[in-house]
Length: 124
Image 1 (cartoon, one colour):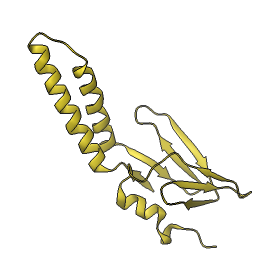
Image 2 (spheres, helix red, strand yellow; image 1 turned 120 degrees about the vertical axis):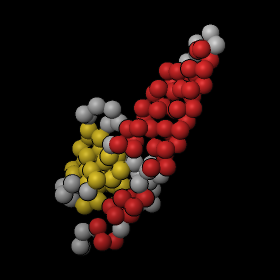
Image 3 (tube, one colour; image 1 turned 60 degrees about the horizontal axis):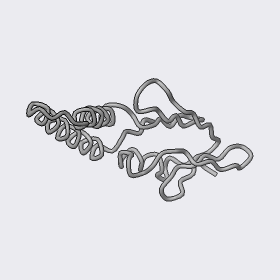
Image 4 (cartoon, one colour; image 1 turned 90 degrees about the horizontal axis):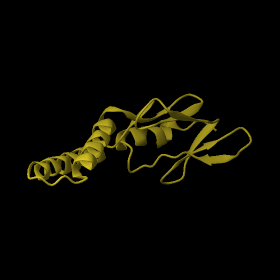
């Protein structure tokens, strides 16, 4: 199951990045080059990527957390998933609990609810 980024976060990053980029370009036209252009490009890129790329994948036996830029990913194998209010945790066959580095506020609310809902939990 694919979990996307929150579109509000992506839209906010995109809007702030474009505003910073436009103000930086305007100041550059006036003869004063500052870091606003570079910061604007980076924040705009982050906004576009949060709207286009998935945040993480929940597979049958693992959770894959993707990097924002590039092909890098981290895999967290599990026998069952647990939810402690704000974070997802994996439980392995020995009962060891490990937190996955994903947060609820940055995940799409519908996708997060599908992952943490009662119908997605394995039968005991």
